[in-house]
Length: 220
Image (cartoon, rainbow, N blue to C red; front, side, top):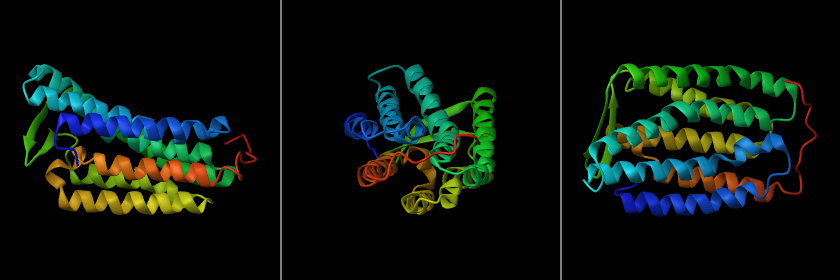
């Protein structure tokens, strides 16, 4: 978990390096979105660095709120859509991609709900026990958290690629542990999550270099 703007900025730089290394290993356009996840995590950490600067008084409270809204949208809205979509695009066969489509749809609907919640209800951003707490009356609900986990991890378990299934299990364990231990600041617990996820993605692209690109059946 990141405890300061400096920690977020350092983490963002490290994840950016991982992201660039991962993107250099892409061999097919269908791999691009999944390979872009570490870069997305890097940008996400950069955003929260500015939230810290706003909360610390270095920048204005408006900056903290606006960047906080962007952070929540990325964490709670974009990821549950982009994760299953990236995995579905990566998969070789129509049957597997069709099996993953419900998770993409769920993630898309969840993203729309998050956008609606952030638009209609005020977002409250504060510091509690060295962590940033993001509170929105529409999005801070147990059922949202449950759907988030399903959308983010579900499609990975339908993959024919062992590393993807292992990545799904890693995601599931990390999310459940963080929600249990740091529920009050669950959205902000992204440094450790992003780092582990990014390294896993890079390792996969490095180890699978000889087996890619796959012979994709292009149609859904």
